[in-house]
Image 1 (tube, helix red, strand yellow):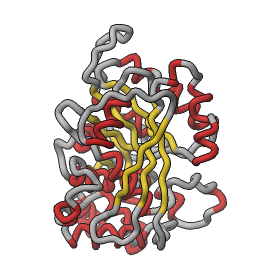
Image 2 (cartoon, one colour):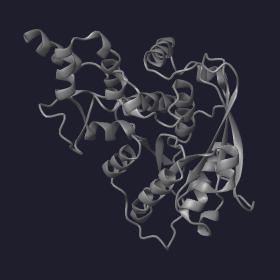
Image 3 (spheres, helix red, strand yellow):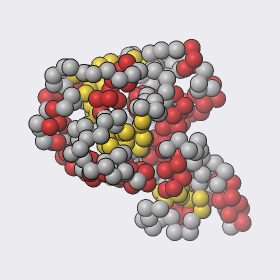
Length: 328
């Protein structure tokens, strides 16, 4: 028993993903201790998602199994903690255009981080190395006037440009993780204001989603709480259409102040919690005016796409008779 408690002391100095990858090597007693006691405090996750912290700390709590919005238990949330680790890497790459300064980008993630990433990839099921270039389609979805087009032009051009086109369109970004061979073409779709004329379900079920397998990248305005409150409607439309998501939710700061929205800021903790409740997604706040986290969603989606098959629909846990069910 004393040895098991000593493990709990050690665990507090490890990253969540490291503990999850070690569960196959520990005995049942330690496994149960981790299940019953190991959590990550929600406030720490908020600071992490906001870029204030670079690491996540594990805390010991005697009733980790109890549902509580103030913490996230370790076991049962492997997908979430994998995504948080990928977000950590995306933050490091976040202000670098994937198509520029390739030599500089290759030096951002050191060899140890890349080796560790490959270790995590091979440990968790469903990872399959891509042997050819692939295309990822996703559309930035949310209420009109929240800054989606602004973000799109910043990702595409590195600065704001007025768009005079009519109807949805996409632009492409070629993205490669440093020191890896497989390249992905990101086809990022812009609604261009057509959400004013269609219902949320029509936006998600329309022909471009079906024809190009366009995934959902949900967004809201950090300055207008009413757009945040409508996220549930967007989420529901995505779930009802059986559309796959990107695993990340965006909180945008628009350079324009739209009079039809009451100016009321969104609480960071509420945003992080809302993203978590939607298929264990992570949250990132983007400020185009101050060039904060512009390319984070692109790098995150690239890392996730090359990590495992989270883009595929989750398998029925009852059909998978192994330990991984309890982790997810």
